[in-house]
Length: 497
Image 1: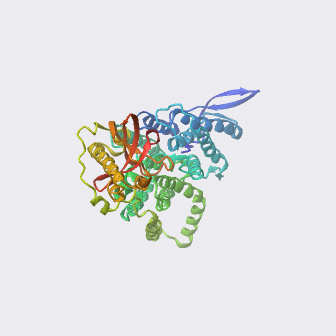
Image 2: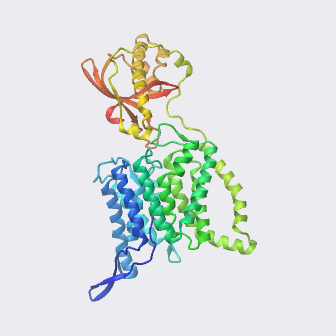
Image 3: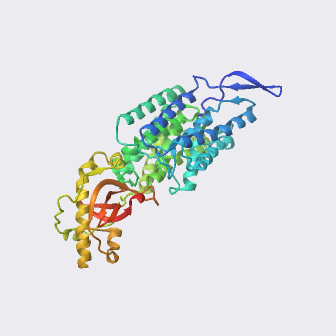
């Protein structure tokens, strides 16, 4: 999002500095950049108020301030004007909209966590607009380039992009789509850019459909199972983030063609390139970076593609439909081949032998051993109300698993233990010592996330408190669904989940 939609705002006044008069250009209500800024700012407000974004107001201000502090003196040096940095603020807002630094918590409004990452990414983005130029125009969309560079250089252990999925459909999500639709129609129709956006989405959605039909899967931190097939297509193709990308990022007039037909070809090229780069990705992180990188690649090659297309037209007199007919089968084949690495769903937990489950004894859980089970807001956000129907079964199977495990320890029977525990819990069974039974006071179903891999599929767990003898218990038991029976696979201190 660079937002350089108009070259200059009307100079309504001027100031004198050391005897020299300099024009001062302030925002105009007719400037499309203000309309775009209003749309993105409204989405930022929704993210802070309703969508639980792990982004602070301070981090947003760092992005905006960095871009403004670079833009104002650079424009003054280049044009000898004092200009309200509308384009720069859009670039900073675009970076803040997508970039997340791990460790930031929603609600910590003034967190400066990773402020230097936000500043560096915004600064790189803004500088690219002034340095990477061709025939007086920026080559690559600034915020897009800064984000791709940040994600590729730092990786998922440090930063992550805004999720494709923003939450269960709700009044707030309907409001998000309405804000995007109104903003898009206001900006893109006025500038004649809507056909380019539609060309992108048509090609991108069709390419995703090919991948979905082939069984494409990605892991995501907001899904307890791999996202595959039709779910993959729907979530990515209709993601608010993809809508923002196609309506407000690829449509930057300064980095896209100026005529209708080349614009549509440009949009289609971004859609296909993004899909091809996305095809081999197995995580949401890789998929999101691939979509962003598709625009970087096409923008960088746009001058070459334009010249090559003009030359081909002159030499062969090929029409656009003829060229498309030649490209389609090659593109489909490339998508299928590129998507091979993500064709199989990643497992979400340890493998469980069916024979071990068959040996699971019936256990009568004592009355009163299970307290009222609650469900955390994190689980409800990801899974919806369906988690509530599973909560009692999880708690029952957890208590039963602990009872079976205790009997197996007393008997030294690892086969009996394998009917109740799995994964790390089973691996440590031989060295584990017998414990007194726990008297549970509270149980809450939670999501257990891997702190070393933020893109890993989260697992279900039960945060339990109580006492073991005279010692307090405050722990998270990690569970795995094995065909309707919940097995105990691990245990963590409550602060680690």
